Length: 183
Length: 191
Length: 243
Image (tube, rainbow over all chains, first blue to last red; front, side, top):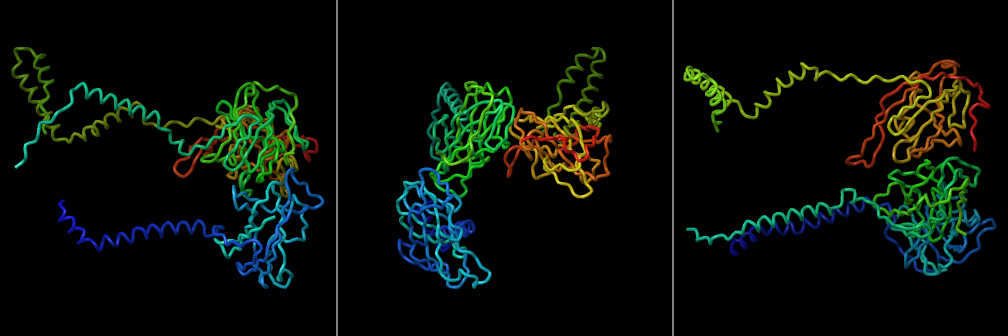
């Protein structure tokens, strides 16, 4: 084909070509996005970060300034050697609703980003302390007012860096709350 | 009006044959080198020896103290007669605790796979903790003939080993002393 | 495309016939050969194979090659004989009627008793086999049936005889005594009755497409074992288990 007929072809098909140039990437993006959404819309993927010592409102709950500290386990605890207990206290106000929340874990924010789960068994934690937001059928049976989540984690004793507690409120997925703390 | 085509120069016959044979040889070589279909889904093997810490994708594990005996005892009052291979394992999770369940330890010898016995109280299945090692024992019930042969202990999270780490620790049973009794450790935190 | 006339018959008959009558005999055979040649020209080449298959099959049928193969008879075994059904080598030792047998993993309702059968089993495959899987047609549980129990033909529980491990796994090459239990109506069997236990063969299939790995399945009855039943009543001291 010579140059003149090539240019003619392009001109005659300009509308179709531009339509393809737009529709092809849009279709790919829609298909990929749709698949990603159906796989991940129920998982905790996007963190909403609350900086150290700050408060925030997330999922209809006010999360107060969180505090982490080395804690003493209960009397009958049998801690593994070379570990310590980090307790994270997070004041919580559900404003009269019975929104549930669960704790995914305590995570290192740098390095290998290791994660530990709440362990009330090994630490022989006081059973009266709250480690997640309970759902209630009626809001007047206590817990509708503010309370404090008291979360024990068993971690290797050389952990000291910046940490964060990941919390999930189901209606907010795929966003979740990440509360930064430093013990 | 076709333009005159220049005469085509062709290779001498011997050259054609040599090139043909060389290509045939290359094709044979490619077939030999090509991995089989299984290789696409093969597990990623992490080799380690007894006493050496093996780093898999999701966990670290050390196999120690393999021992062979006629009767195996656990710490909860069970015992079993036969030919028993007992090993101690120390394992921890590398990154997360959720879903970190060590569930598959087998002994492979001569193409036959023996799974860790469920008869005694053993370390399996082990809920792994991040950075916090736990120790326990597993026991393999073997036929008498295997006690003189080498084998490999394979460790993975799940019985489905494809496309995940598989720790392999070779053990030669002929080199182990045969005891009358072998005892299994209780499962607990590594001291 | 016409096939060239067959030169073979022409030249052969031309040589074989007597010289005196050569001319007319040779001409007739040559015409015959030409007729055959022109006839076969009209039949599409591909049909020749199909047409030749018919006499071939007819001859095979005449020799009995198309008759149905008689299924091999199912052997009747007595107690103690071993039968290899695929992954397992099984020998049924004895059958015992007992009121209750919770140690073997079975609980029975009112009006039912336990039929406990001691089976010596060895795994003859190359990896550990479970004795019980969720499908009643799988593993050792799928290999045994008592057809005379009707709906209750499937074993309820399997446990090891020595340490009472429920639903044990059998390691390759390590034989074990197992207690396989059925729930029977209290009046269905009595001491001295003969019960027929079917051993079914399993076939190994390999996963294709969406399934992966090897699996033993499709049980087919392969042996009948006849065992006399003994009755131990409440069975306080009968099947003792250790550990």
